[in-house]
Image (cartoon, rainbow, N blue to C red; front, side, top):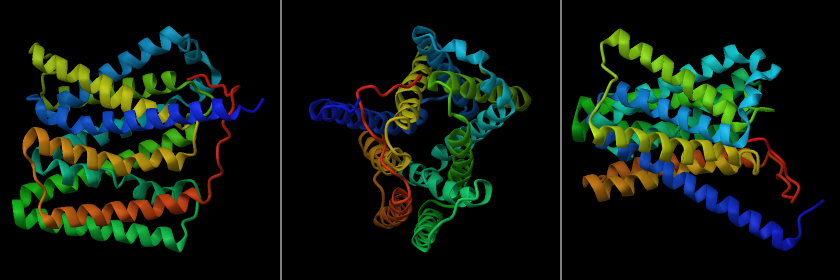
Length: 315
């Protein structure tokens, strides 16, 4: 049964509210990372650990965890392992970049992930990109080069290293998104995220042990930051975006990537007095315009998701 106009307006308002909430929560991630005094890999471990714990608790409350035994989960477990490792590598390359370059540069570069997703989709998923999309890709690459060049001359090689780490994080994030796009069907979001976050946490723990980092942290301030990272940008940010994929076309959710660098830059200006230079903002703007072109082009190939009162999902 189709929704009444009033019910549809209410549902649309809920979707917009959730989208705004998720953008705000994701934007807080970089600020919380900078606020921590722990090594980057230790932060990654605790963020993914608490993310998995919180999602498991939500899944338990909703009665979703029984789906862990579904054949589709067993069948794709090796892919979930690879997706979790991709998430671990995304965080493990992006987090250190925040120590080496500005929040504005780091976040906008890591959020070029849709560009890499578009490129990899043509290879892995046999999808095609239009000339307009390739133009957006070239614009984004040009903006990234300008941003990296500016950082090199304004802040030195350390900032350039941070930029390259952020771009590496974007590559791993795109692989994580492609994996999620292909293997989340038929699985509650709580189950999928619990599995993937747990694998990412375990992979990071192994990295910490190999590299000699002690993950046991007793400082109450650090523990609060870790829990905040697990709850705000992870559960209320990324997991809500995954949930919204069941309600609206993917390009609507992907457009949130345009909001994160803006939100994170504003928060960095407020809390850390990081004021971007004119050239940095120029590169920032060129990158966002390039991403916007690709997302707009993708949107033309996706049909609308009908909204109805009897919409069901297991997330």
